[in-house]
Length: 241
Image (tube, rainbow, N blue to C red; front, side, top):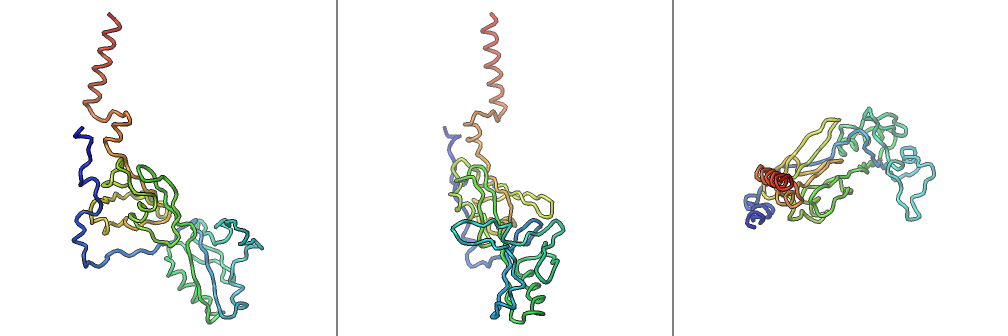
């Protein structure tokens, strides 16, 4: 019974948080656009007519009626070469740029035609996949282009007592290369972890605890295997007499 009980150190979040008091945030985050991302780009001007050529042509598709429009049809998808096709300007390199970098570039280019143009860029397909012993396994859509691990955990309802808070797995892919991060939510050091802020298309997996795996019937120790072998051997002797 004692072996099945969780300790305070295994359950409590952000232990040692006192050391964060009056410490500046060393992490900053702004999403960097990748191939297959979908961008919403809006060009505004006091004169709507001069800004109109720089707006996406949605082919008469209506935004009304209460239905949700497919983001791929209302935004610019970054192609496999990392480019978007933008009205008037043509091919624009977007992959590898942050939102502020792309906004600055487009503003400078459009100012050659519209001197008071204001450009805003939004990432439409920022989403994170959550699996394992979290409150709910789901795909979480991020509207403000920034989400931290604590925000994600809160969004899905927290980590159950059957999940490992000390070893949350984050799988990330950038330019076709996968990387792995491990996050410990029980320590305040999580706020300085490079995986603290999530990127679009991250996969977050909360592993089950040992007692959860054991309760599910999996044999996870040599003692269990020996016990199983002894039982099978005894049954064989019993039925072959």
